[in-house]
Length: 321
Ligand SMILES: [Zn+2]
Image 1 (cartoon, rainbow, N blue to C red):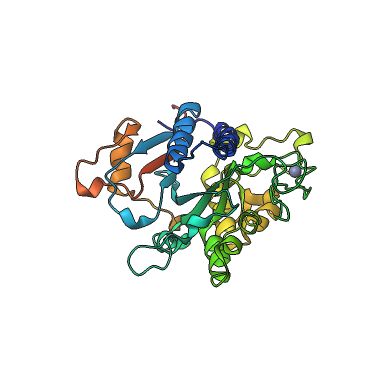
Image 2: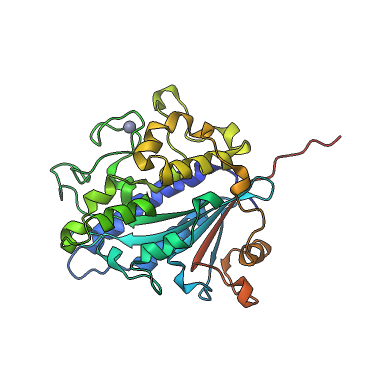
């Protein structure tokens, strides 16, 4: 099975981000608790239910416990090749920090983000990202808004502020994506500072975007009725477009670079040969089985993360002669 429409995925991701915001905001009330792992499970379950053709697998039998990844996306098809994202999720705490970024790494690695980065390689179209789970009451940082000034608002391709932007609203940052290179740079840069300053949310939000943007930046001018994913694009080479976007986010200007290049993300030069053409055994095994709980048949088939999502391009219809 293969995904029908990227637009459906982006819409579902936006809805899930706002749900996550509500859950975390609610979790701040006295007597409430917030469970990070259950949010991840819930998010991916929601996407699986709402997006036709999306394949999601959960496994307790993870081979590289040390990959530092909470979930993995594999995006592409056998002809175009596959692009991989490894994601580490971190929630916001009541002191408005992502303080668990201090989590130590595996073996010699100083931090968990070092371990995550080590397992990825942009030259092989394998990218490391963090997704921050955010949520706080309106007015927490500034009267009348959910946004957290002075964090920079990168979600507007038209360069409007968070107050005027019609492309996204602050709660779309309920699931905010940021290159793990930027996470490392921002965290290591303040390494001697107190935790409250080192991991404060505004610093990271300035380099982050709503997570759906990684799969499709909104068009510059929505009034011209441009769609986020033109129907033609869903049949065309969207693997190139996503690959290009991830590459810009990772090493060609980050969130700001992607915002500024949003009009031509489809034409970012990418090296298709760098993608994966021979999938790891666990992905092949998953593609042969039904989405849901995945039991590896051998050590070889143990996945790299507890959750795996496969976004496979629908095959182009070939005309019969
Ligand atoms: Zn806007």
